[in-house]
Length: 250
Ligand code: ADP
Ligand code: MG
Image (cartoon, rainbow, N blue to C red):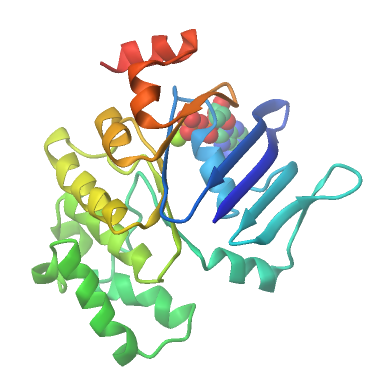
């Protein structure tokens, strides 16, 4: 579903990703953990081209979004092709990024109508079904400002799902929430995982990573320090840096 190979990315003199390899199979949940500044968000943002890589390759559903040419420089698919490839991805941010002047339902149907050219009548039933699924059917006509952070984030998840992505990217989706509101968002994400949605989740929620992920990656300083299945990863981390990090998270 997703294959990233030897990803390098710098911001000016600062090397942020130093040769990252990632593979995610259909139905898998990859959790990415690691200290602040290690490059987790940058890696996630490279998947949907919010950032561009310097070299390496990114393959989504067997199609190359970017590949390295003979000079070692990343070359991107043309705009039309890239748009098609990226239609497979949906993203949820730490700050929910809902359109403040639109109701919940309008937030959901905006992209399907504007980007996919769907008719309102076509997408409305699906949008309502998704609101039901995230437990917000009764909030369809509310504005984001009238909702709690947890509710807004669930709307953001439903909005991303409304584009029918094959892979969902989450960048610390609960980090901006009051602790008592993280549970409802994690529950929605767990349900998605149980339905075998392919997911890449940057998170500080170790319990979620342990229970919902099929694979865990620990990143530090732009490299993958350790990677494994959650059971083994959390019970018997091999690297000293992983051990120190996990100790701190307890
Ligand atoms: P994480 O998500 O793991 O906290 P980030 O990917 O956000 O890490 O950041 C990795 C490093 O890249 C940090 O040192 C950060 O300051 C830097 N960085 C991120 N985005 C930019 C940018 N747009 N311009 C310059 N530096 C950036
Ligand atoms: Mg980040």
